[in-house]
Length: 111
Image (cartoon, helix red, strand yellow):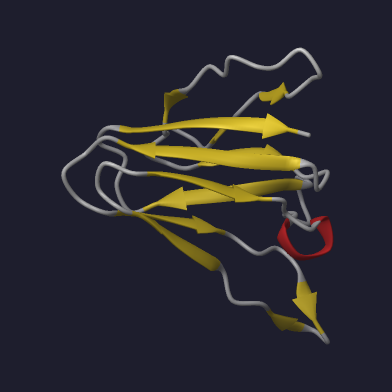
């Protein structure tokens, strides 16, 4: 299975009832326009680390990826992602990897 791209859901003045989906074992990708927020819901009994892959460089050197722990039974909102730092230079998408996906659901919200 390859990395899958999540569809963004717009938050509007009338509100949003978000739809979540299972995290992809091979990772997910989101639009790299800097307006996205990633919502991660960990319903498992253990912590899960989501790694936001940095595609940018600073003075020709790679920038360290951003790792965020989603505690067991908790939720995290992560974002917004600066395109210059997080966009994959080939796809223009932001890539997210997980160290586990059991009972992990995700949604992408745009503001």
